[in-house]
Length: 225
Figure 1 (cartoon, one colour):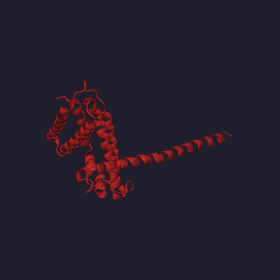
Figure 2 (cartoon, one colour):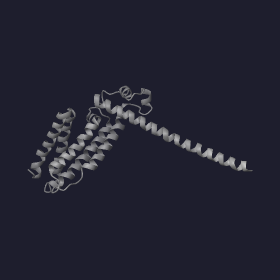
Figure 3 (cartoon, helix red, strand yellow):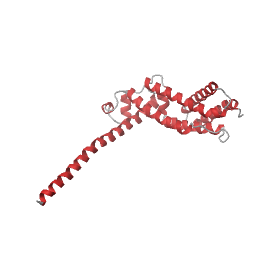
């Protein structure tokens, strides 16, 4: 009789262990798959940053990742799918930067130069850390979905800049604030291209030039000169 009691208990323990193992397998496969995706996206980012989107190929990305093209195709059907996934992840991170940096401020407590310096530094740091972002967002042949998401991102950026500028220009009509915000974003993007084309001290010099250009443009409009 005792043996009959112990046997079902042992079987139950074995069954529980088997069930747990079966549940863990998909999670492990999912984790391995995500690591592989990250590996491929990081390789794609390096290739896009070096050659641009148009000249990049799935073979080059697979080679950069140290995997076979067949392995790459298990996760992405083509170069466009890789670019869309990478672009979406980078734009998500950029939106987080918007949320953290582009917040309403009080002119009496925050000097204009400080606002510009903090915002520019944060965005330049992001673009220097992710050079593929600029290559994907500004290339001539980027996938349509990326272009659409980038347009939405641009609209969000302009709206956030308007929110920051409004307290500095309380008497300006909304249309004028929008134009000023568009000009600020345009100046920033033009400066960004020059900044990314240089390194070291020369890059920092261009960063300072960009900050100075924005300050000199905004001071007369805001009556802070």
